[in-house]
Length: 427
Figure 1 (tube, one colour):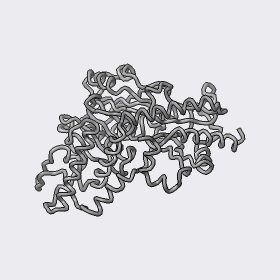
Figure 2: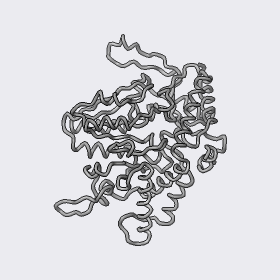
Figure 3: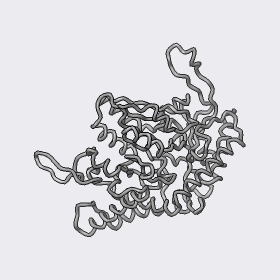
């Protein structure tokens, strides 16, 4: 399907008309097609019930749909259904791992992260460090470069237990070679965790090909409902992982003396799950399958290539963008600023503060003008990636991020909005 045809499946675009909004905040969350909305409504309308508990008709129908959703989503990334744990989002999946895997770590054990991680892949490990006194090491890569296997190998020691990295940066769009990185990690005997929040929705991902131990992703970033995500874990990895939460659904027996757990993946799904979310995510997976993930990737590659071409041709005064220029390793994410004026001279600072740069147009102001003037909806701020923002030497950035319903016309509108902002602020 072409992007214009795809847009017809999204009711929100009909609300604003053809020239209404240009939605470019897809790295944060995507819009929902009619097929996903109808799947959720169908659950509430026709077979609303809890799962795995009732032997009556509605309960059996709900359980069947829920189980099929797990199987379908697992198949989408090349995993078995018992290797898919339903969680709220990528954040919860990574917190689950930090707590469950973290319970096995001791003082001085090492975890490797990178400076381009989302806060969800930093803060849980920092919280673990406070509890267990583990050591965290950071790969400090430049924004123009992807993370290389050698970057990881250089930090690995006999104390390295976990390496947790994003497959694709949510601020730079850099796509890392997770298969080669995983090989390096496994050669050292450490565990490989992949943050797939920006990779699973945008490109073909098969966990068996990557070889990782765990991978996390969110449904709302791939046309699905909010509040539903998945943690993939290899069967043998999940079998050896202690549960994160306790209560209903995850237990097999409970006595006054103790309890026994259900089989995987249910032992990690305490309480009533997001049934309609899983069913909606399965519908989103079917929608993406119809398009083909190779086509999704190719479409976004064409859009980001066109974006970089427009950046060059428009030659906007003060525009600075971030991320690799290798389009084969670049997702449909475009982060930029207008002006980077030095605020401090690093060498002459006496208090040790890092050098910052002041944006000639603050990203919040640019995003506001873009929305009100051209209906272009962008994200501004630190993008839950403050370590990278700090390493860029800025306080914030504006980000455009593309998906299947975006087109070259949207890119043109983006640059019209940027130029309008520059004119408005008199630069």
